[in-house]
Image (cartoon, rainbow, N blue to C red; front, side, top):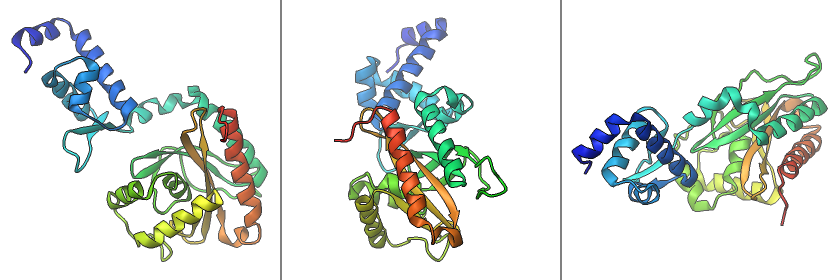
Length: 266
């Protein structure tokens, strides 16, 4: 319990509360999912103080409680939204931006860069080919979200998880048929995931939008962790005759991003 003296000291020194709150935010961000007790231990603050600061961070949208996990907290993507205007200063995404720009102009199609946010992907960068007259331009924008289960990037990111984790994400997602080809059966979806694992890329075959095929592939950082994924979207009438061409270039681009980020395949 927070004592009157502690509350008085914090009222006298609001900077202390800010520092403590930021420290808790960093702890939660580093652990992704963490309990109040663990935060208390790592921060050196009593549970009552931690709970009060967590409540403030929840109200302001930076932290959320995990559904069906009492007392477990995780960061939201508001941190990304806050820094989105400065995303060009993040080295890994600056590097990726250069490569997806080259890819877009090579294949003459829109290319996206995405990151995972729980049950969704967030499109943090979009590149259109410079020759808009001959290229395929997708009407989309950075900052939009999409479900993981019906997108190539979402599926390729999911494929890196064990089946149990995939099922957890599936059950936390509102699964609905966006098109007649959307996966809505989990067993069939797992078969698709196993195919993605074996081939090293994912396809969205009109699962999110009819007449459009997307090719997605993940990339890694120097720690060997998945950093994000890239994708391109092609009208199905053009994709069918050049599928190998688009798949090859997307996979090569993702591999080049990983290499530039210091990833060393085992």
